[in-house]
Image (cartoon, rainbow, N blue to C red; front, top):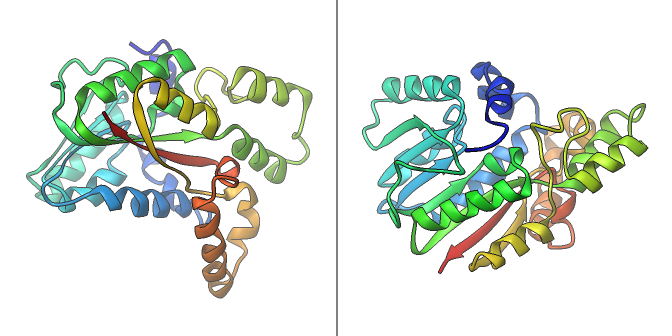
Length: 263
């Protein structure tokens, strides 16, 4: 069981806030756009998919029509209640959602899914518990199946603070929390940060084969992105496409995806 389970639940108890987080503005839409784009490469009509940290079903409702079966699991009951409401209204028969803990997926059988999406837990767990999630994801993933880990970058998150709140960042306190402790300086027991290199090392140490490491939202300059005209945004997306796939740039993305193959 995750050590900060109750703190995570309290943070997400208002499911409507979580449900809207991808639609606040142009910058906040980037994470959803690229996550769907890159995960979509591994979705097909015969695949069984499980998403751990499914929230209110943003990705589940999008991918369910494109795969054979989809199961969403989240630690927050309020998120699952809203997700199940969406499922009921959609009429889809191949998608389910239930409460569960990413560090111990007791109800999930070994080697039962083609694609395992870990799209939330790495944001909220310290390194030793992230390792439990990696173990569980390997256990439930079929041989040669795909596992995708979403994570928050130390540098990308901190850069966002420096650009969006220059009166508060950078600071000695933030340096200590972000770079030494690997946590958010405001909610250190809820949000945990890492780096592309640390994530790849964790994967390879657990006998996963790293396929890609991709940035999904270079939103440290969110104010500038939101001020762009449609034409400017179109050109920004060309730059963002290049950055998202460049190993030298991934670490300055706020969120990123590590795509691995199970062995």
